[in-house]
Amino acid sequence: MSACVQQQNFCSYQNTDIFSKQSFQYLESIMYPRVIEKDQYLFLDSDRADQLYYMKKGQIKITKLAEDGKELVLYIFQEGDLIGELGITADSRYNYSAKATAHCEIGIIQQQDLETIIWQHGDVAVEFMRWMSNMHAITRSKFRDLMLYGKKGALCSTLIRLANSYGIMTPTGIVISQTFTNNDLAELIGTTRETVNRMLSTLKKDGVVSLESEGKLKIIKLNKLKEACSCEDCPIEICRI
Image 1 (tube, rainbow, N blue to C red):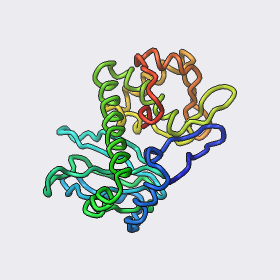
Image 2: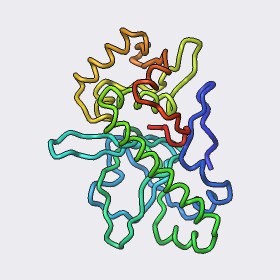
Image 3: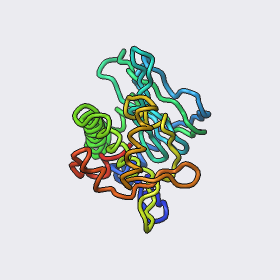
Protein backbone atom coordinates (compact mmCIF):
# COMPACT_ATOMS: atom_id res chain seq x y z
CA MET A 1 0.00 0.00 0.00
CA SER A 2 1.20 3.49 -0.77
CA ALA A 3 2.38 5.41 2.23
CA CYS A 4 0.95 8.83 2.92
CA VAL A 5 2.55 11.15 0.37
CA GLN A 6 4.56 13.88 2.08
CA GLN A 7 4.40 17.33 0.51
CA GLN A 8 6.94 19.19 2.66
CA ASN A 9 5.05 19.36 5.95
CA PHE A 10 1.64 18.39 4.57
CA CYS A 11 0.38 14.80 4.42
CA SER A 12 -2.01 13.84 1.62
CA TYR A 13 -4.43 10.98 2.17
CA GLN A 14 -5.04 8.25 -0.44
CA ASN A 15 -8.30 6.35 -0.36
CA THR A 16 -6.43 3.01 -0.30
CA ASP A 17 -5.03 3.89 3.12
CA ILE A 18 -8.18 2.21 4.42
CA PHE A 19 -6.71 -1.20 3.47
CA SER A 20 -4.22 -3.03 5.67
CA LYS A 21 -0.82 -3.83 4.18
CA GLN A 22 -1.73 -7.50 3.74
CA SER A 23 -5.11 -6.80 2.18
CA PHE A 24 -3.57 -4.39 -0.29
CA GLN A 25 -0.97 -7.00 -1.24
CA TYR A 26 -3.85 -9.35 -2.13
CA LEU A 27 -5.33 -6.62 -4.34
CA GLU A 28 -1.96 -5.94 -5.97
CA SER A 29 -1.63 -9.64 -6.80
CA ILE A 30 -4.67 -9.51 -9.12
CA MET A 31 -3.86 -6.20 -10.86
CA TYR A 32 -2.65 -6.04 -14.42
CA PRO A 33 -1.01 -2.91 -15.86
CA ARG A 34 -2.32 -0.35 -18.30
CA VAL A 35 -0.95 3.01 -19.45
CA ILE A 36 -3.24 5.98 -20.19
CA GLU A 37 -1.85 9.10 -21.82
CA LYS A 38 -2.96 12.63 -21.02
CA ASP A 39 -6.44 13.52 -22.37
CA GLN A 40 -7.31 9.86 -23.01
CA TYR A 41 -10.30 8.27 -21.28
CA LEU A 42 -9.96 5.45 -18.80
CA PHE A 43 -13.66 4.71 -19.26
CA LEU A 44 -16.68 6.53 -20.65
CA ASP A 45 -20.20 7.18 -19.48
CA SER A 46 -22.24 4.02 -20.27
CA ASP A 47 -19.19 1.69 -20.27
CA ARG A 48 -19.69 -1.52 -18.29
CA ALA A 49 -18.88 -1.16 -14.59
CA ASP A 50 -16.97 -4.38 -13.95
CA GLN A 51 -13.45 -3.18 -13.12
CA LEU A 52 -11.61 -1.13 -10.49
CA TYR A 53 -8.55 0.98 -11.27
CA TYR A 54 -5.60 1.67 -8.98
CA MET A 55 -3.64 4.86 -9.66
CA LYS A 56 0.06 3.97 -9.63
CA LYS A 57 1.06 7.25 -11.25
CA GLY A 58 -0.69 10.28 -12.71
CA GLN A 59 -4.06 11.95 -12.21
CA ILE A 60 -7.61 11.17 -13.33
CA LYS A 61 -10.65 13.40 -13.18
CA ILE A 62 -14.18 12.01 -13.01
CA THR A 63 -16.65 14.06 -15.05
CA LYS A 64 -20.37 14.19 -15.75
CA LEU A 65 -21.80 15.97 -18.77
CA ALA A 66 -25.00 17.92 -18.08
CA GLU A 67 -27.87 18.26 -20.56
CA ASP A 68 -26.74 21.80 -21.39
CA GLY A 69 -23.28 20.52 -22.34
CA LYS A 70 -21.59 21.83 -19.21
CA GLU A 71 -19.04 19.49 -17.65
CA LEU A 72 -19.05 18.93 -13.89
CA VAL A 73 -15.93 17.47 -12.28
CA LEU A 74 -17.01 15.07 -9.54
CA TYR A 75 -13.62 13.82 -8.31
CA ILE A 76 -9.92 14.22 -8.96
CA PHE A 77 -7.97 11.05 -8.20
CA GLN A 78 -4.21 10.91 -7.78
CA GLU A 79 -1.41 8.45 -7.08
CA GLY A 80 -2.43 5.87 -4.49
CA ASP A 81 -6.20 6.13 -5.11
CA LEU A 82 -8.61 3.39 -6.16
CA ILE A 83 -11.19 4.36 -8.80
CA GLY A 84 -14.42 2.87 -10.03
CA GLU A 85 -17.41 0.91 -8.86
CA LEU A 86 -18.82 -2.56 -9.37
CA GLY A 87 -22.35 -2.98 -10.66
CA ILE A 88 -25.02 -5.04 -8.96
CA THR A 89 -25.89 -6.74 -12.25
CA ALA A 90 -23.77 -8.11 -15.09
CA ASP A 91 -24.91 -5.23 -17.32
CA SER A 92 -24.40 -2.33 -14.89
CA ARG A 93 -22.93 0.78 -16.52
CA TYR A 94 -21.02 3.87 -15.41
CA ASN A 95 -22.97 7.14 -15.43
CA TYR A 96 -19.81 9.27 -15.58
CA SER A 97 -16.48 9.32 -17.42
CA ALA A 98 -12.84 9.17 -16.28
CA LYS A 99 -10.25 11.26 -18.16
CA ALA A 100 -6.48 11.41 -17.65
CA THR A 101 -5.08 14.88 -16.91
CA ALA A 102 -1.50 13.53 -17.05
CA HIS A 103 0.40 10.40 -18.10
CA CYS A 104 -1.07 7.60 -15.97
CA GLU A 105 0.04 4.13 -14.96
CA ILE A 106 -2.92 2.06 -13.82
CA GLY A 107 -3.44 -1.29 -12.12
CA ILE A 108 -6.70 -2.89 -13.29
CA ILE A 109 -8.74 -5.21 -11.04
CA GLN A 110 -11.37 -7.37 -12.70
CA GLN A 111 -14.61 -7.87 -10.77
CA GLN A 112 -14.42 -11.67 -10.92
CA ASP A 113 -10.85 -11.65 -9.58
CA LEU A 114 -11.83 -9.31 -6.73
CA GLU A 115 -14.78 -11.54 -5.83
CA THR A 116 -12.41 -14.51 -5.57
CA ILE A 117 -10.05 -12.60 -3.25
CA ILE A 118 -12.99 -11.46 -1.11
CA TRP A 119 -14.29 -15.04 -0.87
CA GLN A 120 -10.85 -16.31 0.16
CA HIS A 121 -9.97 -13.53 2.63
CA GLY A 122 -12.64 -12.13 4.93
CA ASP A 123 -10.52 -9.16 6.02
CA VAL A 124 -10.42 -7.91 2.43
CA ALA A 125 -14.23 -8.07 2.27
CA VAL A 126 -14.61 -5.96 5.43
CA GLU A 127 -12.06 -3.37 4.30
CA PHE A 128 -13.54 -3.20 0.80
CA MET A 129 -16.95 -2.43 2.35
CA ARG A 130 -15.30 0.36 4.36
CA TRP A 131 -13.74 1.73 1.15
CA MET A 132 -17.13 1.79 -0.58
CA SER A 133 -18.73 3.47 2.45
CA ASN A 134 -16.00 6.10 2.47
CA MET A 135 -16.48 6.85 -1.23
CA HIS A 136 -20.24 7.26 -0.69
CA ALA A 137 -19.54 9.62 2.24
CA ILE A 138 -17.31 11.79 0.01
CA THR A 139 -20.04 11.98 -2.62
CA ARG A 140 -22.73 12.87 -0.07
CA SER A 141 -20.62 15.61 1.49
CA LYS A 142 -19.83 17.18 -1.90
CA PHE A 143 -23.45 17.27 -3.00
CA ARG A 144 -24.46 18.62 0.41
CA ASP A 145 -22.10 21.57 -0.06
CA LEU A 146 -23.20 22.17 -3.66
CA MET A 147 -26.91 22.10 -2.85
CA LEU A 148 -27.21 23.71 0.58
CA TYR A 149 -24.75 26.60 0.72
CA GLY A 150 -24.94 28.26 -2.70
CA LYS A 151 -22.12 28.90 -5.12
CA LYS A 152 -19.97 30.77 -2.60
CA GLY A 153 -20.29 27.97 -0.06
CA ALA A 154 -19.49 25.40 -2.75
CA LEU A 155 -16.37 27.34 -3.80
CA CYS A 156 -15.18 27.71 -0.19
CA SER A 157 -15.77 24.00 0.43
CA THR A 158 -13.84 23.14 -2.74
CA LEU A 159 -10.90 25.31 -1.65
CA ILE A 160 -10.81 23.48 1.69
CA ARG A 161 -10.83 20.13 -0.11
CA LEU A 162 -8.04 21.27 -2.42
CA ALA A 163 -6.02 22.31 0.62
CA ASN A 164 -6.47 18.85 2.13
CA SER A 165 -5.50 17.17 -1.16
CA TYR A 166 -2.70 19.43 -2.44
CA GLY A 167 -1.91 21.90 0.36
CA ILE A 168 1.57 22.86 1.55
CA MET A 169 1.76 24.65 4.90
CA THR A 170 3.77 27.89 4.93
CA PRO A 171 4.18 30.56 7.64
CA THR A 172 1.60 32.76 5.89
CA GLY A 173 -0.98 30.18 4.84
CA ILE A 174 -1.69 26.98 2.88
CA VAL A 175 -0.41 27.02 -0.71
CA ILE A 176 -2.25 24.70 -3.10
CA SER A 177 0.67 23.04 -4.86
CA GLN A 178 -1.19 22.29 -8.10
CA THR A 179 -2.40 25.13 -10.31
CA PHE A 180 -6.18 25.32 -10.74
CA THR A 181 -7.55 27.91 -13.15
CA ASN A 182 -10.83 29.70 -12.53
CA ASN A 183 -12.32 27.51 -15.23
CA ASP A 184 -11.12 24.39 -13.36
CA LEU A 185 -12.77 25.67 -10.19
CA ALA A 186 -15.96 26.42 -12.11
CA GLU A 187 -16.11 22.80 -13.34
CA LEU A 188 -15.71 21.57 -9.76
CA ILE A 189 -18.74 23.49 -8.50
CA GLY A 190 -20.95 23.50 -11.59
CA THR A 191 -20.92 27.22 -12.41
CA THR A 192 -19.33 29.63 -14.89
CA ARG A 193 -15.78 30.98 -14.93
CA GLU A 194 -17.15 34.52 -14.61
CA THR A 195 -18.97 33.61 -11.39
CA VAL A 196 -15.78 32.13 -9.95
CA ASN A 197 -13.86 35.27 -11.00
CA ARG A 198 -16.25 37.46 -8.98
CA MET A 199 -16.25 35.21 -5.90
CA LEU A 200 -12.46 34.87 -5.85
CA SER A 201 -12.06 38.64 -6.25
CA THR A 202 -14.19 39.12 -3.14
CA LEU A 203 -12.21 36.50 -1.19
CA LYS A 204 -8.94 38.17 -2.22
CA LYS A 205 -10.25 41.62 -1.25
CA ASP A 206 -11.23 40.26 2.17
CA GLY A 207 -7.77 38.73 2.66
CA VAL A 208 -9.09 35.17 2.75
CA VAL A 209 -7.04 33.93 -0.23
CA SER A 210 -4.27 35.29 -2.44
CA LEU A 211 -2.73 34.40 -5.78
CA GLU A 212 0.89 33.27 -5.62
CA SER A 213 3.52 32.77 -8.33
CA GLU A 214 2.65 30.46 -11.23
CA GLY A 215 -1.04 31.01 -10.55
CA LYS A 216 -1.14 28.98 -7.33
CA LEU A 217 -3.76 29.86 -4.74
CA LYS A 218 -2.88 30.45 -1.09
CA ILE A 219 -5.45 30.14 1.67
CA ILE A 220 -4.76 32.75 4.35
CA LYS A 221 -7.90 32.58 6.50
CA LEU A 222 -9.06 28.96 6.54
CA ASN A 223 -11.61 29.72 9.27
CA LYS A 224 -13.43 32.18 6.97
CA LEU A 225 -13.79 29.49 4.30
CA LYS A 226 -15.17 27.10 6.93
CA GLU A 227 -17.71 29.68 8.08
CA ALA A 228 -18.96 30.24 4.52
CA CYS A 229 -19.79 26.55 3.98
CA SER A 230 -20.83 25.69 7.56
CA CYS A 231 -17.87 23.30 7.70
CA GLU A 232 -18.53 20.20 9.82
CA ASP A 233 -14.80 19.43 10.19
CA CYS A 234 -15.09 16.10 8.40
CA PRO A 235 -12.02 13.83 8.62
CA ILE A 236 -9.46 14.19 5.83
CA GLU A 237 -10.50 10.88 4.21
CA ILE A 238 -13.87 12.53 3.43
CA CYS A 239 -12.93 16.21 3.03
CA ARG A 240 -10.87 15.80 -0.15
CA ILE A 241 -11.30 16.66 -3.78
